[in-house]
Structure formats: structure tokens, C-alpha cells
Image (cartoon, rainbow, N blue to C red; front, side, top):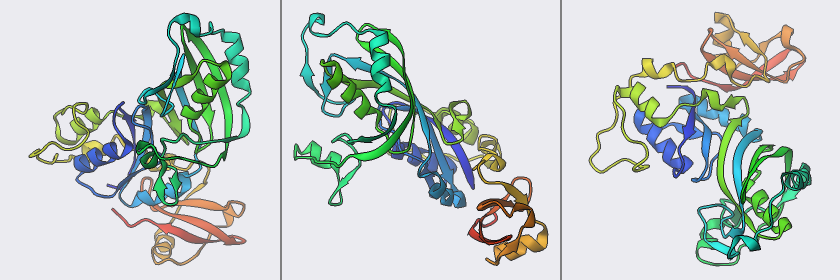
Length: 319
């Protein structure tokens, strides 16, 4: 199957766990994701399958939105609830009374384009080695700050030592680092207790499906998706019902809405499939366009090379 399907990732699973499960359901090796989520996090995890895995290059810098909870009182070595406490305050007297107005004002200090240091427990590489592997061995982890943009960061509610928030950020932003830094500024330590991603690029949580739902659509029976991320020893692979599963995929016309669409006639489609340029006078101002062979078959992403001449940057083989 060639397409994009949105998963509501369960807590405790890595993004790779989810990819592996969907590979088994679809009986298809070619499955990837459009931006990893930490195991603790839940929410929108877009997966690309078949030849449409080549669309991943257009989502590298995608904007993301989140909802979550920051717990004040102690920091952790991973900056989230999965880590070990490194700064504990005994008794509520050691934790300042959280004030909604004060935290809302503090949150505004993170807005805009800023430099952020990734957490030591992250996939950022140091001389080719993921930082978390060094951190687990208690080796020194020195990561360089990277430029990110926080477009929205709002504290929406206070409950005792917990602050609920909503955020809209650029790709590469670590909400764990924001939680950690807020704890430092308040003076009592803090960590990210929970995180739910509500959108990635044009995809949002209303389009997301649970793994149980996908498996049920694929083979007519629901299996537990919370006891073990990988396949169980001796478990038979799921038999996919592609026609039923197809209804769960994003309609191809909804992908990459920033690119205009054009439907090619048969001679034009033939030129594109052979890798030859095409003339699109009605789209002379577009840099890239989506070319369809039918209402649902995405044929190519074409790039304007001169005037009204477009060259197929990516051609998707017919399923």
C-alpha cells in the first residue's frame, strides 16, 4: 500500500515499535514515520508507506503542536518522568506556590527564535554516537545549542505542583528542555510529566487511529497493543485486508497542501513516468506541484526548472 496513515501513538512505545507493528499489520517492509516521538509521549505519529515514504523529505521542517504537563519540585536526568530524580525537594514547603499569572509571564520569555540545548538523553549524535548512549554510561555529554522557534507557549492551568500547557513549535524543539529550564528559572526544578502531540504539519489528532483500530480493520480481530511493543514469539503475522485499511489512509489530495495540484492526461502522465519534463502554463508561479494521474493516484512531485517547464523530482510507481 502506498499512502500516509496517522497513528495515535500509545505511551511507552518508541516510534520504531509503532513502525514495526504497522509493518506486520500491512505485511509491508516499506513503512517510515514523519518525526519521532519520545516513548513517554502520545499522539500524532504520521506514517508513510510504500513508495510514498519518499515524501518524508518534504516534512523534515514541519511545525508541531503539543499539549502537556510540567511537574515542578524536582528535575530528572532525562528531563521527563521516565528519568531519575536529580534534584528533590522534601515537603511542599520547599516548592514555591505556583501562580498562574507568574508562569504565564515566564512562558512568554521562551517565545520566538531562540537557542536551545537538547537533553543529554536524546538522539542527537556526538562524533556519530547518539547522546543517550553516552548518557546511559554516565559519560560526559556536551551538546551544542540549536536554533528553534517557539511560536506559541501558553500555560493554561495550574494544579498543585503541575502546570498544563499548549505549544506550537518548529521542528527540532524539545519540550523536555523547556520544562527543565522553567524549573531552573522558578528555582525548584521541574520535568515534563506528560506530552501529547496534537498535530504535525497538516495532520492532526482528529485524523489519528489507534493501533487496535488499524489491526481490527486489517484482519477483523483486535489484539492487545499495550502489553508488548514487538511481535510475540510464535505469533502469526496479521493477514491484511487492504480494501478495509485504505479507508484509514489520508486522501492523497490532502497531502502537502502548500503545493498546487494538477491532473495529467494520459500523454502527459506517460511523459512523467519516463522522467521527461512537462509544460504547465497555468502553474507558472509555483515552485513545486503535485501531479495526479487520477483523483486518487499521486503520480509525481514536479519542480519548476524554467518558465512553465516542470521536471518530475519524484515519480511514484503505480500501485
